[in-house]
Image (cartoon, rainbow, N blue to C red; front, side):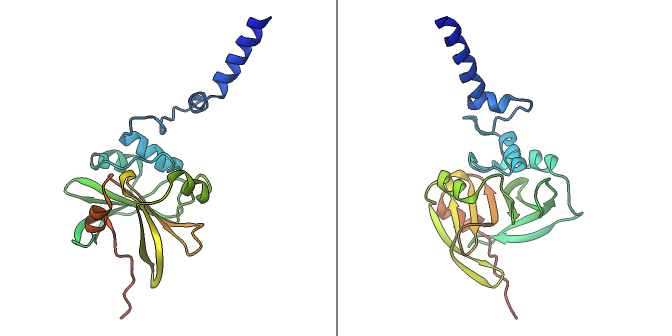
Length: 196
């Protein structure tokens, strides 16, 4: 009798383990210890950035293949205090109301921006899991200054642009893991709308 109860308990425990939950129907290894381009694409598709570990420059082909073009052609912008020029390719992604702006330079993906993302989970839970950001930078939402609203976890390749309440994400930026100084120098966009 004790063996039967122990066997049933082990089966229930195995069925409820996180690994088993991910293996039901669709393979989902976003939370594995090795972070790959496939993990990055899966996280973008799932709109779940809790386990985000960065976007390698080598992920350009994977990202462009996973998300079809929204428009023909490309735009150009400059990033960071050094004015790094990048091409912007607008891509469609299911579950997002806005396009993914895939920013590339020298044949590599540099950054992916998503405006007004509808995340899979609540923003407070994401912020709690991520912990304190390495940087709380000012940014402009159009002409409105958002003091400390750009929260950056450079070692995770992640920046969240929060609204004035800190409860909604206005923009998310995904990039290769780096440090805050490099982010500011080569990855931070100037979102300000300049009035004439």
